[in-house]
Image (cartoon, rainbow, N blue to C red):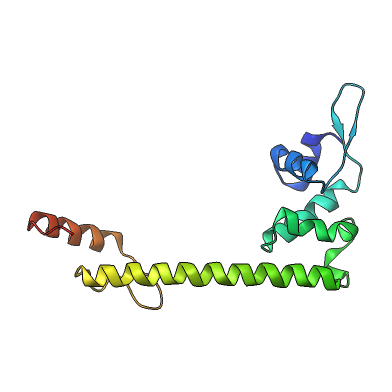
Length: 146
């Protein structure tokens, strides 16, 4: 099948397919006219790639799973290397979440210090745009600037 047909069948963009191919995750043959031609298993392979990417892995991480991308990932026994890649990626995500939570908490504290009340909670940032806008407008009108 041609690249557009694969994109439609797999529910991804042609650009994504080119990226996967450039990254070594999928392969194509070239027809006499130069068009890419993909085998019948390409749809399943792309679905598996998307499944891993959607789970939070990167394209580089997915390379570890190359030997099993053509099969049924949900029933495959995970390899030690695959599990380690997933654990490493989870640790990266946890660090990013912690860093973003710290930034959120600093911003919430700054808003409370600025006198914005009832807009931001400690556990969850629950911003009410109208309340923030009204509070900022009234502070500007009163001549208060930060």
